[in-house]
Image 1 (spheres, rainbow, N blue to C red):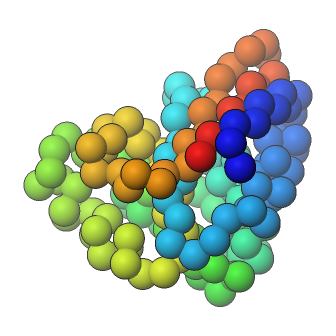
Image 2 (image 1 turned 45 degrees about the vertical axis):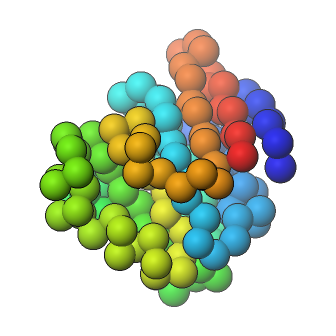
Amino acid sequence: MGKTVTVTRSRRETEDLGFEFANRVTAGQVIAMKGDLGAGKTCFTCGFARGMGYDGEVNSPTFAIVNEYLGGRLDVYHFDMYRVGGWEDLYTTGYFDYLEAGGVLIIEWSENIASALPQDVITVTIENVFENERRITIED
């Protein structure tokens, strides 16, 4: 895939980009999301889950740590690692078990677990450019 940069100008465009991106992802892949609070990580993930065929509600897993979106082309495991402060915390999330589950992991605040990410991780960076404008960089 390499590196692609896309500018979105609405929540819908950000979701649509996530939807399209889902078509390029295969089982077992890990997607590391980066971006400030409110940048659009969960919005992108909402489109991604729809692109995988999940038609339920998608929410930020801030308090649950992980939300599972099951029943689509691939199962999606949506993590929020904001409050993970070390290896012990990471083990309690079930992260390593989910790596072996055969679905796709999409991880918000992935920088908090950078040393535990696989080498072939796909990175999605979302930057606020203007009021509703986001620059989304996808790198593999």
